[in-house]
Length: 164
Length: 66
Image (cartoon, rainbow over all chains, first blue to last red; front, side, top):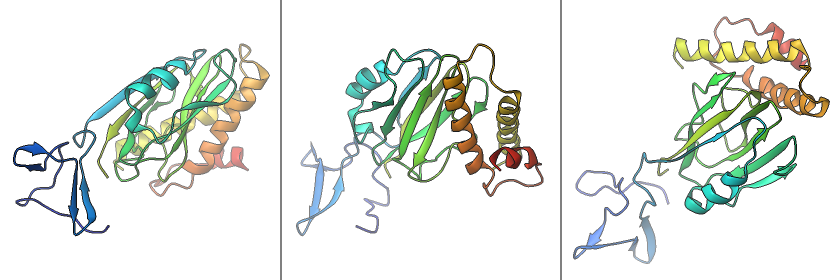
């Protein structure tokens, strides 16, 4: 649905900005059409930061990070090649709409300088971990990371909620 | 992008190019090298087409993509 609705001139950026008789509303309908859904997090909230070391694995990311922040993902992350004990493994994940990678740093190659940005939320990503190298790539969904997806040692990235 | 951001991006690109041109490190398995190289070549293919470059020399990167 196109267009924006402002209340008293302000955008609704918090989780529960709409109340009725003091009760938090999760959804607002107009003539039977949903026109607003509460934000799962306040806009601009950093949801999680994860780090991966060369030679490590994605087990905690797949289980713990996902179970703690399921709304940030379109589906549960999973190994797409190799496995926890493999020398080389890749873990794919898809962010839900409204969530984006706001920070990525690879130990050898540096920090992402443009990022995917809040205007390109969601998207399909792949973590690569080898014996001595690791990194993150974005394979679809618009935008790109300005740092390569494999470099010496470890890497880390942060996911933020933009509400878009 | 700011000049500093472009510079940072170019520095990272040059590291990737140097890394690939240096060849497989002794402590890296051949299979790992193949994956590592492939991932970064794919990244190079995308980054050289970015619209923020000014007068940076991308010849070495383009040669690898070739």
